[in-house]
Image 1 (cartoon, each protein chain N blue to C red):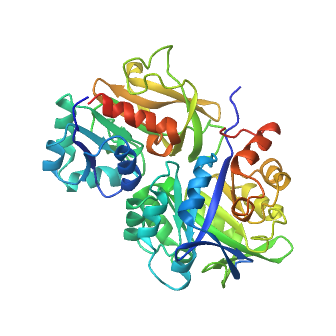
Image 2: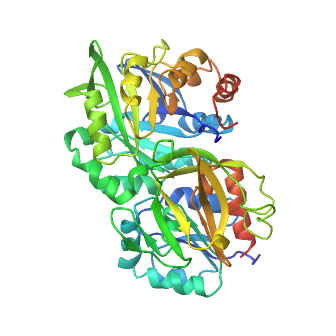
Length: 255
Length: 212
């Protein structure tokens, strides 16, 4: 019998200017540290990938800071998924030229869904990650937000995920706006609402908090990968400690 | 190994160029990115990287007049390393978004993971590679690599070389065994990304430079 695949543990950096920041409910921002230093620490600690989101580029219609990404990714030899203000095919090409291996797209995809199709056709599905920021609006209902969780779209988050799959994306990164930065645990219902049907990998994000919640979102909600920010930034535990715990619970991880 | 071998990283508009060039840069200062035939011809070795779809990749090579140049280079016996899409393009045909001719450096096809795979596609993440037979990695760029180590994969399509002789490594995903690295003499192709697979992946890059 084949071994089950490795679940990926992915530190997520919200980058604003020269800093990694931590949004709480994506509103208030706290400076956490230096992106080079944090990315380096996570690489050494055995992170499987790094997600790097330029949270200013999307919100203020600024261009992505490619130079910063280049310096952050320089000494790191694991995959970088990069998002924030990706609006054109040339933006993707540029990101790949300075350290990205995949791109995460939210705002521009909502405005122009066919961009996902065009990008997948050129760079392959495996390069295009649909980034959904979801906020609970009722029982079993979530609305997709854009621009770093600030703008409503009126679009149902789960329906949007389905559309993204049809348009050819290769992965879904789903953030719970309500849980992000709270440490209160992943939003189990939201993650299940996507993993229950998604034929592509789903990365759960928002609320990690402790070992048990991570374990739960993998075993119970079937997340293919988990993204964490505050818990790792503030050293509640390290990537390696988390992986050892998961391994002790018979979850396959790369050690 | 030659002193400061010139390694051309081929830019055909689709690759994670910085990731591959900084990985090579750990072991040599003579790797360079080029999208020109003259650059390719001046090299002692070639790396064909790749993040993209098959058709877009072949078109990217053709519009720059590089497809025939790569065939000629491979024929010269100098080392060439393809990564992910770059390796897929080395086979005869690809079936992503249609049927397209590849570079035909190694006989075979690039096909989608079959429906029988009991896992999600794309295959994204770290997975083991192992030699098809015991000790098969002697005298290759995987020489002395730990058997059964994890490498980083991100793909929906797989190599299907015509001859078993061209299989350098196998991996298992969702109960399905597939060829994860190919070779023929001076030509190497990895489905996974050695430049993104931490220190073990970097060993492969280092070994490739050693054979130049």
